[in-house]
Amino acid sequence: MRVFIGIDDTDSLEIGATGRSANELRKLIEDKGWGKTQAVTRHQLLLHPDIPYTSHNSSMCFIADISEDCYEELIAAAGEFLQSTSAPGSDPGLCVAVEAQIRELAVLMSFGFKAKEEILTKEDAYQTAAQCNIHLSEHGGTGEGVIGALAGIALRGSGNDGRFQGRMELKAAGEIMLIGDILAQSDIDEVQSIDGELLAADEKLILGEKVKSVLLDGKKKLLVYRQNDRWHTCNKKQLKAY
Image (cartoon, rainbow, N blue to C red; front, side, top):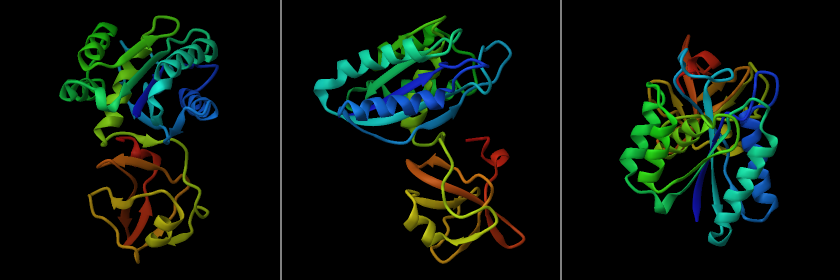
């Protein structure tokens, strides 16, 4: 069965990174033989003085296809993992949603996108999780990470939010590649301009310093922009909205 796994607030200013924790959790699941996992997405939430966060207030989510009989064991192991590995002073939260068992999907989506624009509480998160039949638990500190963990699940599930963690390994910065070659040599589904135009296989693209992909229309896409009649990969500032 397919499950969404979200975590948040596992780090401190001095120690750790939630993205690294998410990938270690992916490895744990695969090493246990419970199933296969997909790449981690980073989801930007509201930045506000009244919201405590380490650096950028982003949560992490990934998808795993697992055997149904290991579901409870996975939740227990993930909770223990967060409890034992999260940085001192962090407030880790864990969210696990079985795709086929989610109720009131619109309520879940609403929570996720509200978290990008409004201050939400743990009570809001627990109420939404219960209403939508989703596991939500805290594993240290104040447990405020449950808010971001649930929001990450919702935003990943929307298919239209988040940057895939890590950079794409193609050619060096400044080099040119055909779109067709990029699609053939990577797991990118489509190359699309920031204005929504899909690029043809014979189009040429100039690679930037950090080539990153985003989740749009349920697909892994490489976003590009046109300058001086040439296509370029988007930079960090341009991808900030994702």
